[in-house]
Image (cartoon, rainbow, N blue to C red; front, side):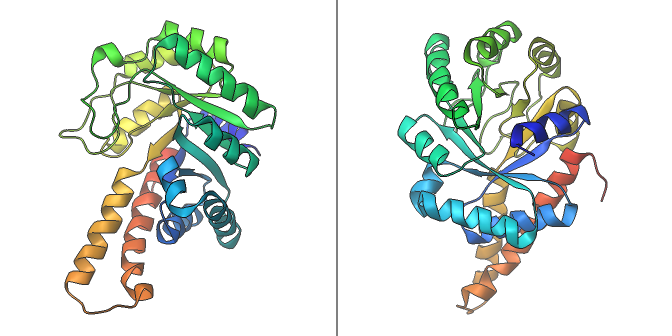
Length: 276
């Protein structure tokens, strides 16, 4: 089953797919073990900075090998990219989906950039995600009402680009929150009524499970989750190494991996509407 089929099936079932970034072998295995434990598919996301760190061939080989090793359905997705050369390279490397992020440009420029990627990706049978509205990135100001996605714009954007899934701005942001955001669920309902493509929630870290599930019930089919993974892994490694002289990385990393596995497993359960 292709990624778009899975997103549609999950949405029809009142569920969503968790999309997690990975940064190295340890975070990748931690995520895959969580998916295996819960028995649900997962989307493995690489950002351009991660690909710069690992190299594209290495990231693809690691993700595919981990999926086979753990017996998990895992889709490979390029997250937040506006570099056409890198998007093309990921398409050629066998990615299941790519995200063209031209959301910081004017509407017309976003449409043009997205349309180019859709044409390129669809020729290779690959799904495309785009973003409409402002989901603030790290270091940017908090979201404002003016930056939220308008339902009529969403309808136009999907029609004009042919995009397969749409990341919407309904009050979330990337990175840490000073206080938990309040999602604009009425706006989300209106967007869902306006378009039929799977909707994506970025900035899932720091948003309560209850709000995740409220959003899923209103049409969110994919939730991006990254910041809490980095935070949990790094904090655990720091804590364990501060109390030990152990230098064997095969012993210092597993406690952090276990913490991430438990964290991600719980988020997968939330997306699948499963209890522990």
